[in-house]
Image (cartoon, rainbow, N blue to C red; front, side):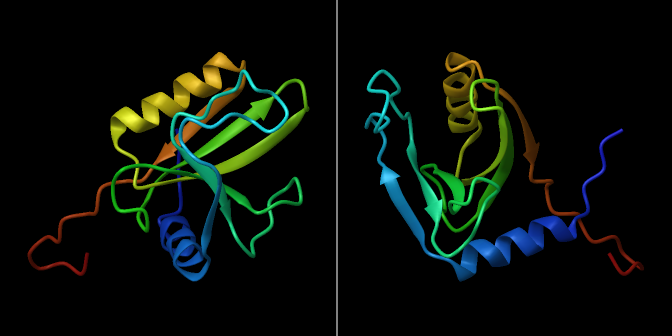
Amino acid sequence: MTSVDLDLWSHLGRLVADHRVVIDRPAGSTHPEHDWIVYPLDYGELHGTVSADGDGLDVWLGSGDRSELSAVGVTFDPYKRDVEVKLLLGCTPDEVERISRFWNDHEMAHAFLDRPAPRAATAGTNA
């Protein structure tokens, strides 16, 4: 069973709101060291944050509201032997699938945590 603390989404949402997104690899651009890797969507980082690799938290930007956290991706790169967290901002289901295909093409194991839909308030409860 998978359990994700709903506060995770509010904390990550505040992190996104409090930091500027810097795009260093626009959609269609190539990786700076591997010209055969082409990014399907804008890719960058949250300026002023720190990830496990010492750089800023990685972000993918979709065509929707780029201030809205759509999902969190976790990748394992067998060549670098590292695990990284990626924030997906404003991504449609199709764009999430494009990111998944990108990771599959580069033999990265990955998983997504999709943001749950807001709970509907129930009459007579404090939901």
